[in-house]
Length: 277
Image 1 (tube, helix red, strand yellow):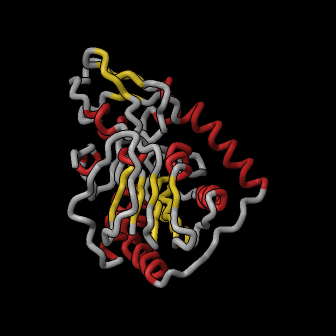
Image 2 (cartoon, rainbow, N blue to C red):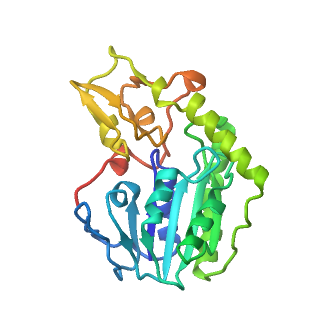
């Protein structure tokens, strides 16, 4: 089994790890990172976790596994476009059981439907799709609601695990036009007004030039000019730089100007930072 995930502040990474535990399969002890431009060929590991950071540099990804999973956050009522781009360069067994878990702040939107539509173009289907409400890292989730979601996580992941173990199928319904229009509106508002990289700025007095923002960015979109972070044109709106800055020197501006920092309480920055394999 292979599980591909995108995680910036830990919700999806924690979900992936806990799912592996519930499936009673241990992650492979060592995963080999392929050089840029190479394909990840199918392996027979019990289960392997691959991050967006790893797969985005691959030209083609093929897996012979019987079961493949995708775990990702919902951005602007849809699957992150950059994560979907990675899936577009994948090939699977025709009979592969493909599942997905979308972590969201209460609004899954058309994320699972979009993924299923793409998989159909590639000759497969999303056999099972799930949503997990988690504390948000963009719009603020009330503290009581955040605690409720974290407390209910264990029960939810057990149910999802049982569904996957039994290879049950529940194809997502096609999105109606109004749902797609709503998702488009959410994306336009979100990328232009709520999470717009042009609104990001650095409090120079607070910034230590540690470079953590550059290292946690899954899209390698941040460069350092001297010791000051600069955002390029490939922001995926994950807000990892904002939430993981140890000095809280990065400011968002706009509606999120007073937003407190967040990361999943059981995920540390060392879990997010890239590691050599």
